[in-house]
Image 1 (tube, rainbow, N blue to C red):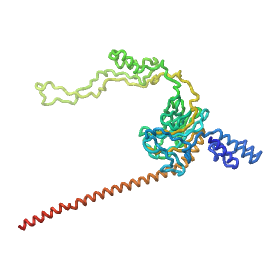
Image 2: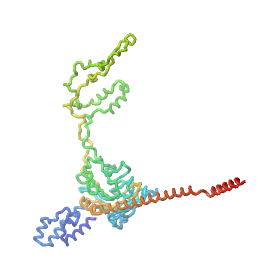
Image 3: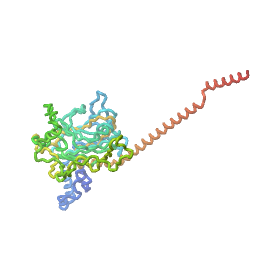
Length: 496
């Protein structure tokens, strides 16, 4: 196991030097650089050798408590550890994996594996010693760079349990955990965190947005024994919560009380369809009343009520809509015998305010919209091992990509979040600025080449236009000869 190598290395280093503990090991970084009391006593009582032995023993205990189940940096010899699947090979749709640093990189010696070519399925897996994360934290971490500016495709990895045929590993192979970014168009730009229980895949309920640029990013998924989790991108926490609430692995702990539940319109609809004549007999207002039939009698869900102190003014209903125009005058040429009796025109009555409506005030007894009370779900059965994934044995990458070019690197499965942070800083964090500079330089060069190409095309177009104009200026030889003959004929005719 990786821990054995690190234990030996750390023991030798600490037995021969007095370097600060925090700089010697990712696990020891959590220990203080100041010797613990037992070590200090050893120095006073037994000298330097005893002190070194005490420090080595403490370090050994710390290292034993943390395990790295799998770590892949894709150095030389990586193909001996990974099995390329034959999935989709018969259909000529199986992609290849290229060992490369990519087009831009912050470290020329840091290679990963890149998908190639476009419109292909990709599947590859590696085996590690089987383990269970019971009573331990599970950390899954890796980096991915979408150099191709991914339009539609996955960038996730999987952990698998039990025994599988690695040569047949593909989209139909059962997995325990699937984690990582997925991009397709404008609608899908998220981080998947899928947990499998009893053959069913459970997607995370919360949204976690993934990175969409063309640089390397580190994705980390931490599952703890207390059933809490964290999702990090580039060592920054993007989501956290509980396996109980953020996945539908178990039935809900509480449900609405079915005995007190409100009658729904759907129920009324179903009831009315049994007796179609009721549709005609019962008005819509009555149906709305029926909806609340099971609401407690003392429950007041009216947010506003008529103001009892607002009384209709006496004579309000006698106010006419229109009144005679007081400024109207009978025309001087009006003839009652011929034109009839003159009547002044009417105008809208400024005193008329429409039908009277009583003002409304806040209901002091308002209890809000009625909802059925919650009760304990009789179907809920707690599972204290909801976080446990037994028999983990493989890590795999299985993808479909329209546009290839994703580079996977630095895959880690461990129980030590601190080591995961340190690994990310040593690989991604240390070189991210150099990678960004290399990317900017590549983009600048690309823009210059495109501009030069555009200038060449414009120059060719201008040249073609110029040649066309020259052709228009130079008369055709046959036309010139005809014109000369006509000129000669005219001269001879004139001479005759």
